[in-house]
Image (cartoon, rainbow, N blue to C red; front, side, top):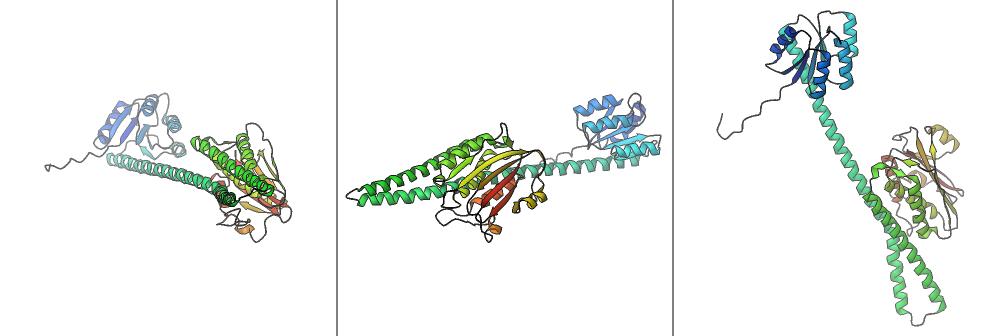
Length: 402
């Protein structure tokens, strides 16, 4: 050994379990394999199953004819414990029936006794090498899955914070601009007329409503972020929060908002903060669809069968979002946000969920809201149907896994 050089670790040897009621056969197989493998022995199928429950093996060699439980029955029970462990069947009674049963049980190899030493060694070696590759592939796949899950979780977290900032940006901009305007007017006013006082009161009321909306949104966002989103969303609680947030929003003024109660215990797989953000976006859009007084309705119901996508489009032509990724398996929950406003113009509709597109003027929206909605729906495995008619309103129906 070279001084100062670390000794190389010995390569880990594969563990092999030999099952045979004949001690002479077990001894001979052990002598053939022990130079290259760690060999354990079992004199019966029951003993082998006990060993397998305690230890991990790269391959199992078992005799076909054994008292009590034969090799085929043993392998059947072994498969119940581990569907992937390689198994080699040793038999002196080579028949088509045995081979058929062995193939059905996923036998790696069928070795007929008496066997050649070189053949047995090469069969076991190749079996163990394949098992090692399978375990390495499985380990890499698991690492990739965990890395992907961590990345998705981080993306979801970033999207959540970005969405909160997006939702707060509008009212905060309004608060800053309106308060500065009000401050300047008060500063230059020498005499306060009744008209001035009335205008200031109205503006103060608007400022209060915007501040209340920001407080409600930030309070619930922090509460949800601290909670466990993996448990999914309770529709009843989300609807309670949605009602308070939308009623505090300035766009609610003069409009008729109806958030209908949902059935007790109705839940969806998507997290509460994601669902609340989706519904706040859709609800605010509906409230801001026109300056004229109008009605906005929100309700939800359970679906006990998959959605008939083709039939839905025939009954209610519109745009279907997320069809390719939709987990269309019952039970599902439908959540609808409807308004009787002016509808969405045909030229805007195809671009509505892509990029920065808005149907509102520069003072009411950035166009990011529906892009956020689209991403959240697709990530949840859900889908959405949009139906709009000029002059008759718009309806968004979400289909979410329960």
